[in-house]
Length: 327
Image (tube, rainbow, N blue to C red; front, side, top):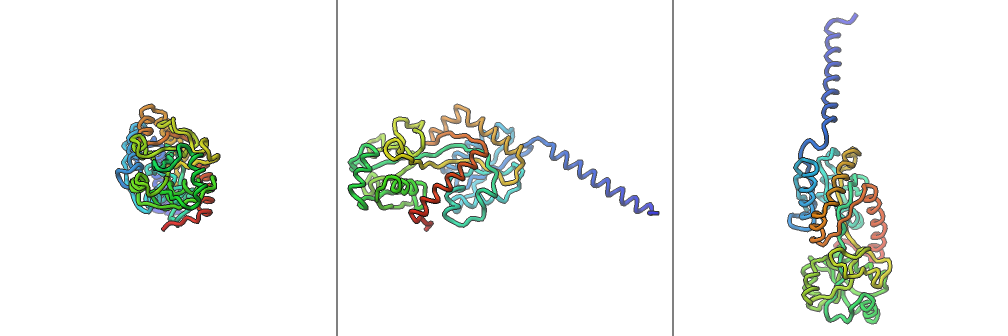
C-alpha cells in the first residue's frame, strides 16, 4: 500500500492542477480588453502614419473602453515596428498600423525578419492613400491624353520626379510608362517637398505626388491632371482618375490597415475588426481622414488579405520590369 505521505503528495498535486486550471479559466473568461492596448506606429512621430495612428488610438480606445497607447517604432521603412508586432504575444494587446509599404513593398524590395502573411492576423483596412499626377506649368498639356501625346513625341527627353527610389511615387511613374508606352527618366528626391520644388522650378516635367501638392495647384503653381485611385477622390471630385482620363487599367494607391500578431484568437480579431468598421462609419472620423488626403476604406480581415495578395502580384511585375532595387 502507498504511504500516507505518497497519498498526500498526490492530493496536493491534483489540488495544484485544479487551482491552476481554475485560474486560467478565470483569466480566459475576462472580457477583452481588460487592460490597455499598445498600437505600434512603425514610423516617427509627426508623419501621416503617426497622425492616423493617434486618430485610431483615440477612437478605438473609446470603443474598447481601454486606453490605446501609441508606440512609435521607426526605422527600416517601417520594418522595425512591423517586426516588433510579428514577435508580440498574440493576445490582442499589441496591434500595428500597417501599410501598403510595410506589407507589400518592403517584402518585394528587401529581406525582412518577418513574413507579411504568415506572421500577422489582418484586422481590416482603414484608408486608401491616392496620389495626384501633377505637371509644371511649362508642360503643354491640360489633360492626361495631351500629356501622353507630348511625351510620346519626346521619347527619353523628359524627367519624372518621385519622393524616393522604390517609393509609391516612383512605382506610379513606372506603371504609367508601362501601360501608356511612354519613355521618361526617373529622378528620385529625398522627400516630396524637394521634388515639388523642382517641379515648380521646371527641372522635372511631372510627378505623382501626395495631396500636399494641391495647395500649389490651387495657387496656380502646378497643374493637376488626375488621381491614381480607382475612383475619383472625395476631396477633389473634379479631378478624373488617370484610368478614365486616358490610361485604362491604371491604379496606384497606397493604403493603411490594422494588424494583430498571427495566432491572435479569432474572437479578438473579430472584435477589433467590428470596432474599426464602426469607427470608419463615423461621419466626423471620415471628415478627418479626408482632410488628411485619405479615402476611408473599411474591409473584413479576409478582404485585407486579398488586397495584399493582389497588390503583391501586381507590383512584383512592375518592380521586375523596371529593375527597381533599394539603394
